[in-house]
Length: 82
Image 1 (cartoon, rainbow, N blue to C red):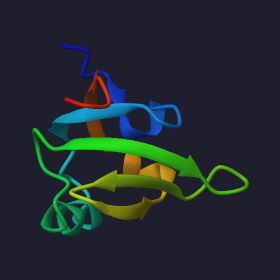
Image 2 (image 1 turned 90 degrees about the vertical axis):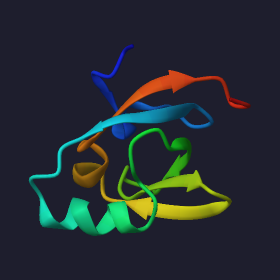
Image 3 (image 1 turned 135 degrees about the vertical axis):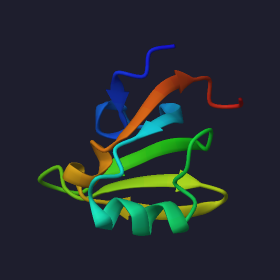
């Protein structure tokens, strides 16, 4: 398992499965309520001009995260259809 990668390390179109979360930040805990929890498959869609925020797709919705927040979610890379 290559969980040293974070959501911020994914390239546009790449998918990852959340393996571990740094929950020390209260904002991250609120994001978990939106579905960013362990074992969730997530696809990186695009970054805004300037690189922040980042847009991800999970459970059929688009969610934007600041790069700093995305670094709290450790992922393993998976195929787009897993």
